[in-house]
Length: 116
Image: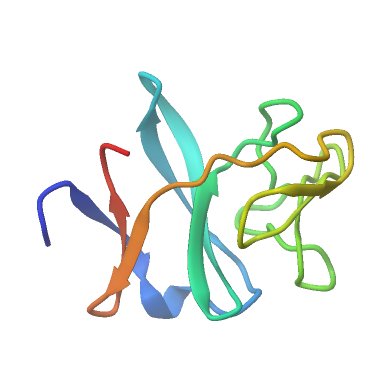
Protein backbone atom coordinates (compact mmCIF):
# COMPACT_ATOMS: atom_id res chain seq x y z
CA UNK A 1 0.00 0.00 0.00
CA UNK A 2 1.37 3.39 -1.01
CA UNK A 3 1.78 6.25 1.47
CA UNK A 4 -1.29 8.47 1.74
CA UNK A 5 -3.67 5.63 0.87
CA UNK A 6 -5.74 3.27 2.98
CA UNK A 7 -7.94 0.32 2.11
CA UNK A 8 -11.67 1.05 2.22
CA UNK A 9 -12.85 -2.41 1.18
CA UNK A 10 -12.23 -5.35 -1.13
CA UNK A 11 -13.30 -4.70 -4.72
CA UNK A 12 -15.68 -7.66 -4.69
CA UNK A 13 -17.63 -6.05 -1.80
CA UNK A 14 -19.10 -3.65 -4.37
CA UNK A 15 -21.67 -4.99 -6.80
CA UNK A 16 -22.98 -2.93 -9.71
CA UNK A 17 -25.83 -0.76 -8.41
CA UNK A 18 -25.82 -2.68 -5.13
CA UNK A 19 -25.11 -1.76 -1.57
CA UNK A 20 -22.31 0.65 -0.86
CA UNK A 21 -19.66 0.41 1.81
CA UNK A 22 -19.68 3.05 4.52
CA UNK A 23 -16.47 4.33 6.09
CA UNK A 24 -15.20 7.46 7.82
CA UNK A 25 -12.76 10.15 6.74
CA UNK A 26 -11.07 13.09 8.36
CA UNK A 27 -12.73 16.10 6.67
CA UNK A 28 -12.46 19.76 7.71
CA UNK A 29 -11.00 18.70 11.05
CA UNK A 30 -13.81 16.24 11.86
CA UNK A 31 -14.48 12.55 11.47
CA UNK A 32 -17.11 12.45 8.72
CA UNK A 33 -19.16 9.55 7.27
CA UNK A 34 -18.45 8.59 3.67
CA UNK A 35 -19.33 5.81 1.23
CA UNK A 36 -18.13 4.00 -1.87
CA UNK A 37 -20.28 2.25 -4.49
CA UNK A 38 -19.98 0.79 -7.98
CA UNK A 39 -21.91 2.35 -10.87
CA UNK A 40 -21.43 1.70 -14.61
CA UNK A 41 -18.44 -0.47 -13.79
CA UNK A 42 -16.60 2.27 -11.89
CA UNK A 43 -16.14 2.87 -8.19
CA UNK A 44 -17.14 6.27 -6.81
CA UNK A 45 -16.84 7.66 -3.29
CA UNK A 46 -18.49 10.65 -1.62
CA UNK A 47 -19.04 12.11 1.80
CA UNK A 48 -22.25 10.58 3.13
CA UNK A 49 -23.90 13.97 3.41
CA UNK A 50 -26.86 15.37 1.47
CA UNK A 51 -26.06 18.64 -0.34
CA UNK A 52 -29.32 20.13 0.99
CA UNK A 53 -28.93 19.51 4.74
CA UNK A 54 -25.94 17.58 6.16
CA UNK A 55 -27.73 14.29 6.92
CA UNK A 56 -26.66 10.82 5.80
CA UNK A 57 -28.13 9.74 2.47
CA UNK A 58 -28.81 6.13 3.38
CA UNK A 59 -31.67 5.23 5.71
CA UNK A 60 -30.45 1.64 5.99
CA UNK A 61 -26.66 1.24 6.05
CA UNK A 62 -25.24 0.98 2.52
CA UNK A 63 -28.51 1.56 0.64
CA UNK A 64 -27.75 4.59 -1.53
CA UNK A 65 -29.45 3.79 -4.85
CA UNK A 66 -33.08 4.41 -5.73
CA UNK A 67 -35.27 1.49 -6.84
CA UNK A 68 -34.08 1.85 -10.45
CA UNK A 69 -30.40 1.61 -9.43
CA UNK A 70 -29.66 4.72 -11.51
CA UNK A 71 -29.44 7.44 -8.86
CA UNK A 72 -28.38 7.96 -5.28
CA UNK A 73 -31.34 9.13 -3.25
CA UNK A 74 -31.43 10.99 0.05
CA UNK A 75 -33.69 9.03 2.37
CA UNK A 76 -34.63 12.23 4.23
CA UNK A 77 -35.39 14.70 1.41
CA UNK A 78 -35.72 12.53 -1.70
CA UNK A 79 -32.94 14.43 -3.50
CA UNK A 80 -31.62 12.37 -6.42
CA UNK A 81 -27.95 12.46 -7.41
CA UNK A 82 -26.10 11.23 -10.49
CA UNK A 83 -23.60 8.64 -9.17
CA UNK A 84 -20.86 9.50 -11.66
CA UNK A 85 -20.75 13.23 -10.79
CA UNK A 86 -22.62 13.65 -7.49
CA UNK A 87 -24.80 16.31 -9.17
CA UNK A 88 -28.29 16.69 -7.67
CA UNK A 89 -30.77 16.06 -10.49
CA UNK A 90 -34.04 16.41 -8.55
CA UNK A 91 -35.15 17.55 -5.12
CA UNK A 92 -34.43 20.54 -2.88
CA UNK A 93 -30.78 20.96 -3.91
CA UNK A 94 -30.86 20.75 -7.74
CA UNK A 95 -27.54 21.83 -9.20
CA UNK A 96 -25.53 21.25 -6.03
CA UNK A 97 -23.12 18.33 -5.65
CA UNK A 98 -22.10 15.71 -3.17
CA UNK A 99 -18.48 16.02 -2.04
CA UNK A 100 -16.44 13.55 -4.09
CA UNK A 101 -13.50 11.69 -2.59
CA UNK A 102 -10.38 10.51 -4.41
CA UNK A 103 -10.15 6.72 -4.60
CA UNK A 104 -8.24 4.11 -6.55
CA UNK A 105 -9.17 0.53 -7.29
CA UNK A 106 -6.28 -1.90 -7.74
CA UNK A 107 -4.97 -5.26 -6.57
CA UNK A 108 -8.47 -6.38 -5.55
CA UNK A 109 -9.06 -3.46 -3.17
CA UNK A 110 -10.51 0.05 -3.15
CA UNK A 111 -8.19 2.66 -1.62
CA UNK A 112 -8.94 6.12 -0.27
CA UNK A 113 -6.37 8.68 -1.41
CA UNK A 114 -5.90 10.63 1.81
CA UNK A 115 -5.05 14.31 2.00
CA UNK A 116 -7.44 15.35 -0.83
